[in-house]
Length: 216
Image (cartoon, rainbow, N blue to C red):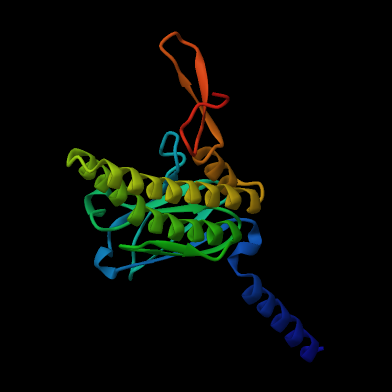
């Protein structure tokens, strides 16, 4: 009987280790940050919409670590107290059920749950895009001011191709991740079309990638 009891306890312990805290249907965020921020507050707040005392959580950093627990699946942001945010990247996460590992620093990142793993892949791709596209647009403006129209036109086409490729990559990810906050986020950020109001108060639909009116 005693041997059987030991075996049962061992099985329960192994199950707990296998499934972690995420087995309770909540999002358990386990964070690390430089211990220079010990004693400072770090926040978990909604992405978009009002931030109130009811929907913003905060904890004090201890030994370079912090934890949050969320029982709703939403897009949220982890960020330091505004007095200490300089040089620290805020982190966009999805509070889906499971154990989420996050690192907060110059290059913040997350991993551990399906939507957050996909979101991290998207952020890496966006980082590459941000390094390429804005500098190219600035160079296009410089070339135009210098009267180098041909070079400006050529570079602008290259920049356009990079932007369209990133938009399409983001839409493909939205299609592949399944229903949830990440799909909603990407779909709203990268629609196929958008509408613009004209001076006569009518609306014209435009292609999101080319910014050209549809049907014209």
